[in-house]
Each structure stands twice: as structure tokens, then as C-alpha cells.
Length: 87
Image (cartoon, rainbow, N blue to C red; front, top):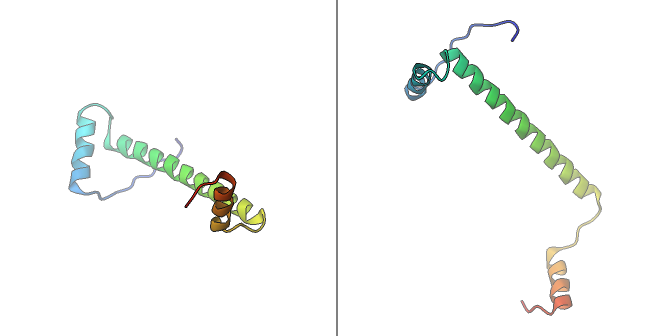
């Protein structure tokens, strides 16, 4: 794990109680263990969000770089004409 740094955090009473109950149940050995697990989950979630955002940015850029768009109404009109669909 590397160097360990002691920190003091403040949480709402409900969270503190949940944390105490979780440790008391034996699911975790200490409150620190619960917080470390929560931070690991948060970090994974944050990393996934960043990757998704980057993929979205790349998709938008690819779309913009692909050339001019066609107005949606034109596309729908062509589809209606092709397949004889009445609006």
C-alpha cells in the first residue's frame, strides 16, 4: 500500500452510524478499511467516467471531421418518399 497518512474526516451522523454498524458486523475490520474501499470504488468510477467522456469527445470530433451534415427533415422526407410513408 505504500506510505500511510492519517487523516480526520467529517461525515453525517447517518453515514457514521452505517460505518460503525458495518465494522461491528464483521464485514470490515476497521472504519479505515471501509473508507479505503469506498475511495477505491470512487476512483474506479471516476476513471470510468473520464474514459467515457474521452470516448464521447472522440466520437463528436469524428462526427465533426466527417463532413457537413444533412438536415433531419431532408433525410425523413427522402425516407418517406422512398418507402411511401405518409407523415
